[in-house]
Image 1: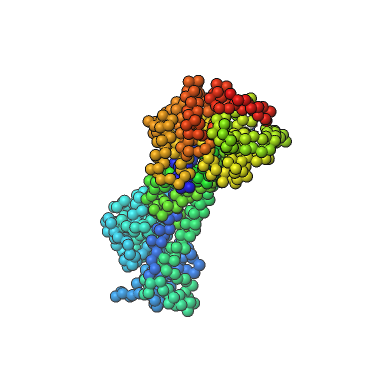
Image 2: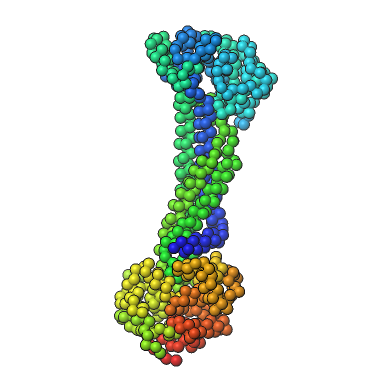
Amino acid sequence: MLDQTFAVIVMNVRSIPDRFWMSLVTIIGIGVVVAVLLAFLAMGNGFRATLQGSGSDDMAIVMRSGAQSELNSVLMAEQVNLIATAPGIASDQSGPVISAELYLIVDAVKRSTQTQANLPFRGLSIKGVEMRDNISISEGRMFEPGKNEIVVGRAVLSEYEGFELGKKISLGKAAWEVVGIFDAPGSVFASEIWTDGLTLQSQFNRNNSYQIIRAKLANAGDVKPIEEFIENDKRLNLEVGTEKDYFSSQTKGTGDLIFKIGIPLSIIMAFGAIAGSLNTMYNSVAQRTTEVATLRAIGFSSMPVFIGTLVESLVLSLIGGVVGSIAAYLFFDGLTAATLGASFTQIVFDFQINSATMVNGIVVALIIGFVGGVFPAARASRLPVVAAFSAAQ
Amino acid sequence: MSADVLFELKNVDKKFVRGKETITIFEDLNMTLDRGDFIAIMGPSGSGKTTLLNMLGGVDRPSAGKVTFAGEAISSLSESDLAKWRADHVGFIFQFYNLMPMLSAGHNVELPLLLKKMSKAERHKHVAAALKLVHLDERASHKPKELSGGQQQRVAIARAIVTDPDLLLCDEPTGDLDRATATKILEMLQMLNQEFNKTIIMVTHDPEAAKFAKRQLHLDKGQFVDKEI
Ligand SMILES: Nc1ncnc2c1ncn2[C@@H]1O[C@H](COP(=O)(O)OP(=O)(O)OP(=O)(O)O)[C@@H](O)[C@H]1O
Ligand SMILES: [Mg+2]
């Protein structure tokens, strides 16, 4: 049985070049489906990784109750002072490790489209900068408090015009000087510009108000003490969560959207690819009617004929899947994209294609090949044996 | 002629239903064929020669009646038993050779052996012997399209005899060949019948080809008219 199956598989696969163009179209069709699917998966993965990379478990975010995102939140200096006294927050020589931050949106020109887009402008203290891991100045220096100086995230530099080191740029009513470029690999902060919080307050007339508080937790992940503290004080209409939770809730919208568009689109295209593969395989069976009938006359059973046709289809789809995955990898992996994140700001992230996504793509290709091959294979295995005598080759 | 009966057809009917129409090819056909015979079946086109050959070869079944081969009722075997029976007892030779275009001559000849429990080395030995018998031992690695029609038919003969079956069924084996080539093929069949005692049933239109057989049967209106040479 193995020998006969193997022989039929060899015959089927070797006959693929007979249907060269048709087989090529099938391979390309499947390859395109896989490439598109992988592009969406890569986008979703990259987006997710960026937002999750931004959040840490030992950092709490405090904002106005129901605000959901930084931009919608507002809190006053008195509330900041109260939170500073809350239990559960880590402290160092200079007191509790917290950072009250302003977060506003300014217009900047995108390099790619030459149009205005929303760029997040964060005001924070030097302490606020130091609280974050993974932030480093790679060119120039950190901003100085009290001066109209900004440091610019690496991704901003590549996506927007006019943020090169030493440039002066007008944002709001004032002019700002770019004094440093910072790296924040895999984090949303790379898509932001930063300055001193008090300076930003005065330049944008936000006296005494902030958007959020970041607080280093005494025990990683444990926001309970702060939560209870807020509940017990009527003046504090606030909510608290870890930074990690905050960012993963922010991913949901856009991340889901990427998958909600990508998956149905891929499915629709997959049906097209299945149709193409069915067509090719029915053709293959029709071309080999005499061959199959002759094998059956010789005494081959129908199973090897079935398997041979199915394997031919799987081979075509495997080639398509591999080609599609490689194409997706070459075109999309590491490609940088910007999308609207939460707060309607632009988040810059990289497409990520790893071996697991590529395996997914190949599995999808094989499913297409299986569905596209199984019906023609059934037809091949049921061809009448007498056809061996009637058809001329 | 030996009295050893190989085939026996009893009250065989064969009808084809096409839409509302029923075509009766055979009605109450009775005949016996002896082991070691070489029979040429002749008759006008559409008289049912191929249909008969198909029933004898176990690739088609009578609508009614019984076909027995060496005492075994092949007409009532299951599909898979019938496939096994064909592999064990029948070698087919077709008008258009029906070689697998993707396989070399040697691999084509090897195909029926894949159904046997046989080592690769044994298979190669049998393939070489069969190809030698048809004088094509030097063409084993050639693809069918690199061979002439006559050579292809010889490969097909090698394929038909490689498992050493009792029976060779040929449908117009020389129908696509010129006279000289046809003669070589027919001499080869004659040799297989005389030296290897293969029972051969050959359908042909060609009276010259039929002369190579021991017996000619003329099929007319679903019945045989026996003609001894
Ligand atoms: N599968 C089938 N369905 C319907 N009719 C069939 C089928 N096979 C054969 N026939 C009919 O049966 C009759 C006998 O066919 P068959 O092929 O046996 O003739 P033949 O004697 O071999 O003719 P030829 O010399 O042309 O090969 C023909 O009329 C043919 O149309
Ligand atoms: Mg015929």
